[in-house]
Image (cartoon, rainbow, N blue to C red; front, side, top):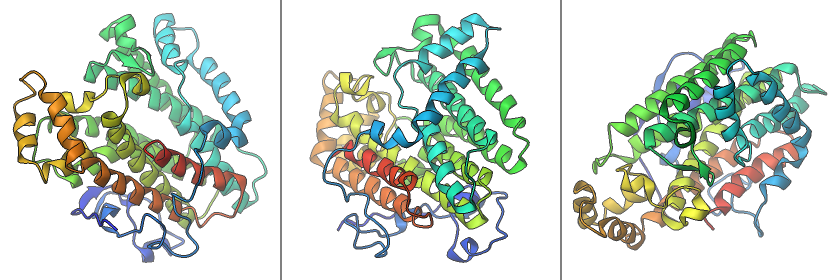
Length: 388
């Protein structure tokens, strides 16, 4: 088995807790402390390194369809779509049209779906028969925040395609795209404040801060061949995992789950989010432009060095030379991609994604068996299935 380790990094307190802390029923989220990203924990990706009560993220024999996993919350997702239309209103027609373009661009609504799945799975523990209005509004807020971040990401990355369609700034211009993203962030913040739960407000507000921090970290490390796996994971947490972790914990909070369950849900979301990001970064090297919905190899071409490249750089000095040149020579990008394949960068990144996936599965073991927990486990396995 391949063992992957990395040094410690600074993450929010809730994303890394000791066993003793998890046992404290009075545990509450507060400021940041230094803790380890869990790549240092050895986990057998075939399941032998996880406790006997923990299922392996790979224990599936056929491809998993997202639509089947989300069927158990299909009614919740229908209400979400209706709510988003009413929330946007008609006060700013151009901004609304821009936002609706990406809302209707074929996204799977995975993030709000996770809110509903965690909400219903934890509600079973506390005897809550129906979701609260706060659960529903939380899902609306999470989708708005996610969409706003996509709009801004496309502007910063100068991406012309998102989910196979023109990006907002391509259609309406950069000014409208930035304002549309700001509009959604503002709407989500207003509705977040109206939830009147200080702990949730702090959690989700931190996500918006993390987005900005992640973008800054990425921009400041372009074409930096000395970027570490530790730094990559922290950036990935900020850009991807923070939202899933905070929304999962917030869902449990609105179900009135105890502190340990809430922290387990945070860990589930964090590790699922990190696994998703690593898988996305692998797909950037293995899928076509048509499959990705954006140009293949786009991250590497812009100097954003992800897990496959970081691992490959450890073995191939020539790759460093090509990256540092900024791919100035014809065919150099294609050569770099080949080197990443040849040096085993993709296989090591795949092991990292599986480690994170198994940690996510492990954190679900505190939940009772149910169709909602099954779907939460299925989401982990679906993600890994994208690179099988």
